[in-house]
Amino acid sequence: MTPLQEQFGQIDIYLFDQLLKGNIVPGMKILDAGCGGGRNLVYLLREGYDVFAADLDAPSVAAVRAMAKKFAPSLPDSNFRVEPVEQMTFDDACADVVISNTVLHFAKDDAQFEAMLAGSWRVLKPGGLFFCRIGSTIGMETQVERIAGRRFRSPDGSERYLADVEFLLALTELLGGEMVETLKTTVVHNQRAMTTWVLRKR
Image 1 (cartoon, rainbow, N blue to C red):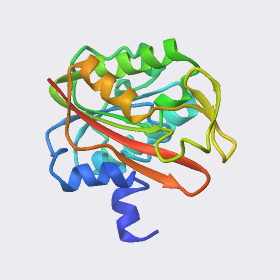
Image 2: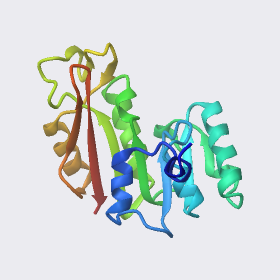
Image 3: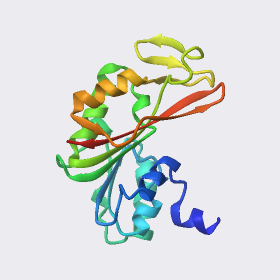
C-alpha cells in the first residue's frame, strides 16, 4: 500500500475534489448514507472528523466500526448503524456533510428513490453539503435500455435507477437546494455513466 492509499484509502476521486476545494473541512460532522465498507471514510476518521454512517449490510457496518476503532477510537459504535438510508435514525439536520456515493441508483422504483433521497436530505443541516454520485443516462442515452420508469439496463449488464440532467435539476429545485458546481459525468466507454451532483441546502 502506498502512503497516499494509507492516508486516503479508496476515496472517491470526486469526494477528494471536495476536500481539495475546501468544501469539507475539519470540525464538520460527516454522515455517509450507504457507507458500504467505508471506502470514503479512511481519511475523515484519521483526521478527527465527527463521522457517522449507515448501511443496510451488517458486515459492512462492522468493518466501518473496526476501522473507526483503529483511526478514531473515541467515536462510539452507535455512530455506525445497520439501517437503510430511507429509515436512518439519526436526528434531523445533524450533519454538515452527507455523502451518498453510488447509493441512490440501487432504488427499485420511484417510491424507494424518493424515500432514500428524502432520508439523506433530512439529516443535512441548512447550509450543509450534499455530495452524491449516481448512475445516469447522460452521454449514454442511445446505449441504455429502459426496463420500466427510470430503471434501465446499461451495456455493462447492470440494471439501475438512472438519472438525467433534467431530473437532477428538477430535484435540486424541489429540495430547495443550490448547485455547488455544475454536474459532472464520467462515461466509461460503452459500459455506464456516473454523475456527480453536489448541492448546498438552503
